[in-house]
Image 1 (cartoon, one colour):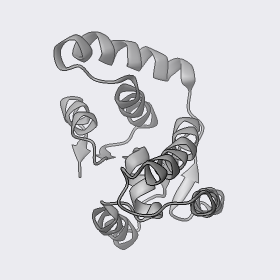
Image 2 (cartoon, helix red, strand yellow):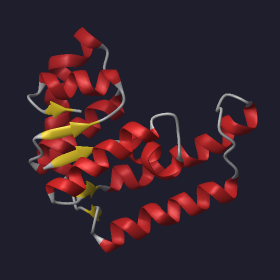
Image 3 (cartoon, helix red, strand yellow):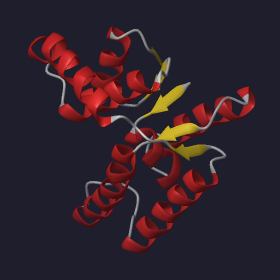
Length: 154
């Protein structure tokens, strides 16, 4: 099973810089007829904020694409509609207590050495708790942690 982090979803749906790469991964998933990507509470919250960050960055000139609040609302609705349909994405419950145990372990073993951020550890912990074997991200540090924990990465 594949776990995709927030930057995969935002690039895939919002037409960001890595949309082509995200679309390629999505096509591979569709061709493999694998299970839908899990969408946890963390991903739901982060996607909302990431889309609002795109609006902010567009207004401040740090995002090349024009991204207005209406676009954020449409992309957010599309994301939730796809997860509700359970075809490509699916809402997934997550045992927060188990995530906390894995998070603590990963943080103790890796953060002082490699400087991982909380969200990278939360995503990799979530993937491990869900029993995923593959981790999709466009973030080098998150991919590094996933690799260190034995997950295949894109």
